Image (cartoon, rainbow, N blue to C red; front, top):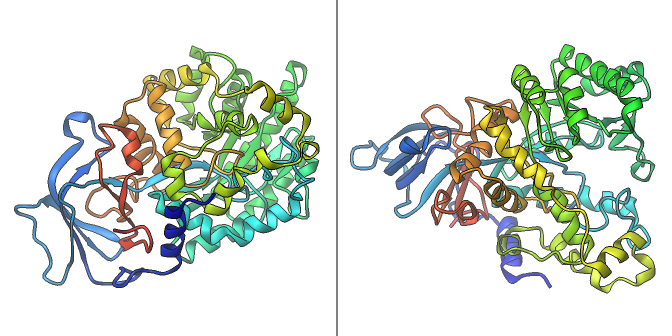
Length: 468
């Protein structure tokens, strides 16, 4: 059943409220009396109480104590006493060609007897504006789409044309060590490269569209194949860097993560899941100044969804796309013959392969080693819904041993590095783009309070449907 608050949210998203600030408006905004959180700072100086933020155009003009801050006479005043302000959240691992429902990854769980993959992809493209709005309504003003069809470049252009979308950094089709024929329509999201020359050619094809990243799907096929796979990775990394793009790598085993780092990876898009990271890995990661994106929840999302134990959180009930949310009830009602045998088994046994304890251990180790950690949900995969999935991810990061402030840093200041926008977003200071989230509760007391959203601004514009 679609939650009534989700329906109300959708109606709000479609109709901007009267008086909403629009992109390009020159009237300044003054957010008065807020508690401002600076995630880039240490705890002792991270909180500024009773603060006024003045925004002019797209950027923060001034920031200071409410008692003494000068407020322009023509400013739109927003009384934020009793509220907390954080930088807009950034999800450094999403896939906007995927929906999060059961029909979106037939290479993992084949429900095409119910919904064809072509129909699913068409639905996702048609619903892209709603997906964008779900992100910004969740306080996420920036995302890194780390791989999808060539259509991803059209998606990025669409996002840049509207205030009601997050900022988007993008990669094109994943250059892979394995094939996924069930996903190969006329615009496949994953393309196998059998040799370094094939990998270079695929990279050059994408570079013509000015990607932010070139992404490799480094799926381990055995120790005997590792040298050849590493050679392919090196070819991709060298071509990407020569073309001005960063190199992102899916490498979930310790051995492939090390190979990816040797090959020039700038972003590891998942945790090392199979073994505890060692000093060699940490030295390689530090030497490359790599970004490490743990994506802790996504495997748990699969486990819960495919064993029919997935339940929407309160934040998902409020903020998720109501159409996708309704589809998450489908598994209980499908004819048994349309459900893949492995999923039927998981439903009977009530279990499956979820997030490894090793992944949680490695996150704390990597953080303590000074490696830059960026929050990413891998949204779009089954059970990981666009927008509010970030709150599940941030909670798991706390469970792994990070403090709420560290998690917020990974999701703002560090995320700006993943976006290629460090010094522009991810912090609250004069001169920065005014991507801000105003909260009803303190996220340092409980990181889950980041979902208690009162107001969202992107580039100084109040987002319609994501305001009070």
